[in-house]
Structure formats: C-alpha cells, structure tokens
Image 1 (cartoon, rainbow, N blue to C red):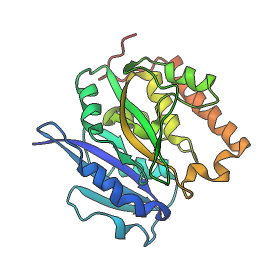
Image 2 (image 1 turned 120 degrees about the vertical axis):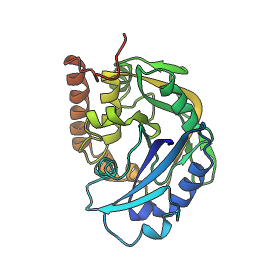
Image 3 (image 1 turned 30 degrees about the vertical axis):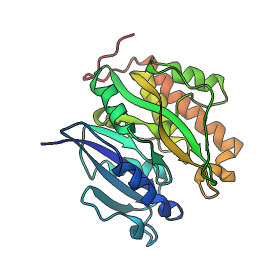
Amino acid sequence: MSRRIVIVTAVHAPSAGFLPEAYKSLCEQELPRGWEWHWVIQEDGTTDGVRPYVPDDGRVTFRQGRPGGPGVARTIALAHVEGEYVKILDADDQLAPGALARDLAALEGDFGIGWATSRVLDLMPDGSTVGFAGEPADGPIERGTVLDYWKANDFRAQVHPATLFVRRDLLLALGGWMALPASEDTGLLLALNAVVRGWFSQEVGLFYRKWDGQMTGQAAHADSAERDARMAVVEARARTLADLQWRHPRHPVTD
C-alpha cells in the first residue's frame, strides 16, 4: 500500500481560476516508489465559483464550508483525507519541479526534523520571477532561529510559510493553523520552529503568484492595529511553547 502526502489548498472564488495551473504543477511532481499524493481543495465558503475549476481526478477531493479564513479552511480539510505528511499549496501558487521529493527526502532522512521549507520566487503578472534576500543556508533550521530573525526583521521570516511541508501528527498536535484573519501560516511556522528542528532547501520549491486580488495585497492586511495584535499573539504562542519545553513524543529534539 502506498504512503501518502496530503496536499492542502484553501481557496475562495476569486482565486479559483488559478487552480488548473496549481494542478499542473502538482501532476509534474515525481515521487519515490511507494509514495503518492492526494490533493484536498477546501473552499472557504459555499459558492458556485470554485467547483468548475476543480480537476476531475480521483486523487483530488473538493470540499466546501462556511467561511472562516484560510487557516480554518486548511485545518478542516485535514478531516477529509489521511497521510503521513501535509504540504501546503495555495490556490494561486505553483510547485517547482522536484519540490515534493526534496521535502520528503529531508524528513524521511532525519526523524528529528519535523518540517521543511524551501526557496521561493515571486511570480509576477508578466511571467517574470523575483527572488528574496536573507534566506538561510541549505540544511537544518535550529529551534528558535526563525522567531529570532522574524522579530529582528519587522516580522518577516527568512523562510516562507507558503512552502511548508510537515509531519501530519505534529501539525495536529499544534492545533493546525492559528485562528487569525491573516498570518495564520506564520503563526504555525513559528510554533513548529519553537518545538522541533526544520529544514530549508536552497532549490526553488514554489512560485508565489503576485496579483491584484490576493488577500495579502489588500489594505486590511496592512492595518496597523490588527497587524500589531496578530504579531503579538503569534509571538506569544511561539515563546510559550519554547518556555514550556514542549516536545512531541515521537519526534525527539536535539539541541
């Protein structure tokens, strides 16, 4: 019986038109023998605007639910399919060739690593790509280092949460994504980094689409009062987990 990677995508109607490109990038992934992926597309709402873009593929599950934001959609999607690992793929993004195999190799090769991230390129409307500065070296990411960098660099992490690949049981133990209107993925990333080592791949793993309708580009996302509140609770959660010296019993942590 094949072992499984669950691909989780939260989607709302404005971004549904990008799903075929995300699907194409997923179909181009090559996995080791004995592994398969299953894609769970969870609409954040119950409109008629998403289903027409969902691929007709037995490896794809489409669900809908009352709107609660992308973190809620991703978390409830975990109820619909089982697998040993969970990979995030936003509806408007695309996986780079080999991304899944590299993530899998990192975690299968070291049980003390609980999650993996990779290099990202912004995919601009004209088709060009733009890279980031400040990414870490290829290899392990020690506990607490993402939080330290994030705090020192205006709440911007050196690794991108949209590239996250994580052990499913670890993800569930931390409660999934934070119940926030935004930054829910950063909150999860910092929580993971507080309790277990991660991995970063310098090879490009994701093309992060930039377009006018994306939620992170809206004015509400930059509201200073809400942003300060989000950052405060994200930091408090990560520091509390570190102070409690929380340990997942199946994933020993070495310092």
